[in-house]
Amino acid sequence: MPTVNLNYGKLKDSYLFAGIAAKVNAYAKAHPDQKILRLGIGDVTQPLVPSVIAALHEAVDDQSKAATFHGYMPEVGDSRLRSAITAYYRRRGVELSDEEVFVSYGASDELGDILNLFDRSLDAVLIEPAYPAYADANVMEGRTIHYIETSEADGFTPAPPRDPFPALIYICSPNNPTGAVFTKERLTQWVEYANSTGSVILFDAAYEAFITDDALPRSIYEIEGAKTCAIEICSLSKTAGFTGTRFGYTVIPQALVRDGAELNAMWVRNRTTRTNGVSYIQQKGALAVFTEQGQREIQELLSVYRQNAKTFMAALDQAGLSYIGGKNSPYIWMRCPDGRTGWETFDLLLEKAQIVGTPGEGFGACGTGFFRFSMFADPADIKEAGKRIQSVFL
Image (cartoon, rainbow, N blue to C red):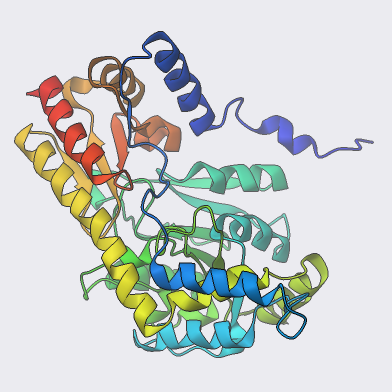
């Protein structure tokens, strides 16, 4: 009888970004005089906003005094912070109770941990191209994965399967890697499918703050019926630059019930068993994001990355290159020119322009022939990358 989880042996040999790093490091070692422009990993470059910095400093000072010191925080999150998050949703027309919000150290953690709520016999449905961690987390669980293929024809936002079956359904909107955003009409189809089959949607809303078109939903709970079939997982990593600070939140409606069990109550039990809560310092920093001043400041922060997308899209347009994303999204999904694969395009851009992006093949077979650019780089690097990519393809 095995003593370890043998599902780890089913994982791909190399994680996508580790493979990219190896190629880039080898090139940098061989060409130490070249400046490499990194538009690959979606890591932010702009510093935390003043309101957050002030709150973090105050929280550290609080921990130095007996009168204001905080030990363990509530495992599900500080009550003031949970209220601030529900108020954030309310301003967008979504009503939640504070008890339906759970704070976390980030969306990546929650997307893996949340699988503990579901029996391993429940299959997973991934819309491909898909962020590789979705598949890896389910492979580790020993779960069967079904892939729904997408393309430019459906805007990389497909309809539900024709043959209904219960499953864990992953939807990321705005999507990583394609930058595509699901419309209300398309999300409604998925919500109706999930409710009719007993499926549960895991809605990754990590990039919701980049949506500026009011006609596009930023939360799945803008769709009627979503509270009985969907869990929403969000993060401040890209919204407020918390990639190195870490903070996220998960919404599990109390109306979400499967097999007679309330998933909200199950998650309370899970968190109070498996965690000691998010640190006081991080929660105080996160609370500042949801203040009126904090919201103004993060809009200024987000405007930097939105302008990056406009600058880079203009350069791609001038080079006659085809792409989606960029609008309402921090990612641009380019069709590789001249019939190249994503990895061939990666090698070409690294060698000829010292630009690093992400080959579409890293996100599944449907990513073949595509290439992802992240708009989280420094604005000067984005501008220079636009010039360099034109020098290659014009």
